[in-house]
Amino acid sequence: MEKQTGLLLSHLLLKNSVFEVTLNCSHLVWKDLATKKKQTSNSIHHTFKDGSFKCIPVSEIIAVQETEVDAGSKDDGKWQKMSLKANESYPFGFTVSYVERASRHCWRCADVTFHCPNGTLCLQWVQTIQERLALLTNRPKSLLVYINPYGGKRQGKRIYEKRVAPLFSRASISTHVIVTEYANHARDHLRTTADLDKYDGVVCVGGDGMFSEIVHGLMARTQMEFGVDPNFPNAKLMPCQLRIGVIPAGSTDCICYATMGTNDPVTSSLHIIIGDSQPMDICTVHHNNTFLRYSVSLLGYGFYGDVLTDSERKRWMGPARYDISGFKTFLTHHHYEGTVSFLPATNILGTPRDKTRCTAGCYICQHNSQIHSVKKLENKEDEDISDSGEWKVIRGKFLAINAANMSCACPRSPKGLSPAAHLADGTADLILVRKCSRFNFLRHLLRHANKDDQFDLTFVEVHRVKQFRFTPRHCEGDSELNLTESGKRLFSHICKDHPACGCSPAYSNWNCDGEILPHAAIDVRVHCQLIKLFARGIEEQPIFESFHTSAV
Ligand SMILES: Nc1ncnc2c1ncn2[C@@H]1O[C@H](COP(=O)(O)OP(=O)(O)OP(=O)(O)O)[C@@H](O)[C@H]1O
Image (cartoon, rainbow, N blue to C red; front, side, top):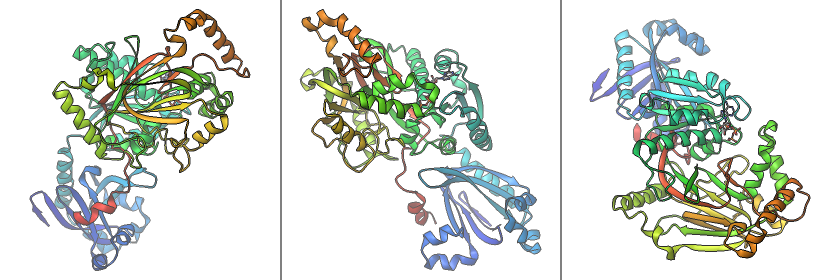
């Protein structure tokens, strides 16, 4: 065995074979000595699959610990077949737990147990790997965890206890767990009493609503600490320091799909453990210079507002309520009149019609956020916003007005509302679906799930924006309308209560990340990278296929 500048190289026993095991600053590699010759001549993928060669980044090692050699025989039947001689020659063992990629962006925690000829060597391996892990300062050591026991199928507590807590414990992460007792419990605790200095991150176990609670709590706390008044629409909001982890246990889990490509609790846990970091933009929503809410994923007026309003009355149905309310809202086919004004995002990379997607290490997010940072440093952030000449105004009748801060992909809509939207580029995609026939609207909706472009329709337009405003017609300074205002409001309620009525109500509600806003007239502004998640964006392909050759 040699140890040179942080590198270990040993011949260790793995199952029945002797492997050459090496550790350098960035990778742990093991090769079956018996098949080493074959590896150099054959396809590396083949040798990878048969277990005779493996290379893992140190950054994806979860933990390492000494192992009772006898324990190995319980794990793997093949071990028992090992010759007595080999067993006697390698009486010490250590187990490395690491991230392994499964299908559909899912990650698993895999274990490999190496057997050593002596205790000193075994200890040296364990200590050296632990030293390397200790150098990874991005990993959380202490987490504050909120569990919503009523999200989704009410499995939050069970998911955490059975699938997440054991992984945190294996990675030696300490946790303080709070099971929420009422809606907004987590938000209020974070905003006021939580001792945030004690933690390296906040984890929520629940759905998108629970994530939104955490964002609101952390954002409120951060702005309070820095003396920023969020009621001021042009306030320069301060970014939250603590990263947020999301363990999916909700109905839609849009945030997990957008940031990890799956809603698998183990995958989320592993992203948290290895300390991944994915910045995200946040929208502020104001009404008449009063702060209403933050939005992270979707703001939807018209169709998506009506679906949410209806589905909230059907909470008892569980996740099925979205399909039923969606179908019902589609049939009612209401349109809404109003004015949309927006500030297009200019001088940046990317458009909503791009074929490229926001993926792990997204170049567009990096590039555009740099432009934002430079403007911020030069205090020129508001230059384009104050230039009223750049604002565009569209007045009309709309079936839906959506602002997507991310693709909003989920199993119901695999491409998402805006497939090319970015998580952290400082913009949102504003999608306007004008009044059209029910058939045409169905064509648009169906295109969210097939290969056709949902924006390539005459009644649909999409704009990448930094800021937008919506004023429903009944709120516009129109004297004729003002006279009939109260009558229209009453009329709209009658229509909403009786969906069979053919006419459209005067106004819809805004669906803000699954919450109904109390006002239809809103001002929205995108803030670049205000929060960070324990995630890395969706990986395009299993990275082991690209890194293994250089690492060997
Ligand atoms: N103990 C609790 N009792 C009642 N409501 C709660 C509790 N804890 C959290 N909530 C609220 O429940 C709402 C829904 O929770 P959550 O987002 O976890 O699940 P969901 O709505 O089923 O999933 P999704 O948001 O992904 O559709 C949230 O808005 C949250 O504020």
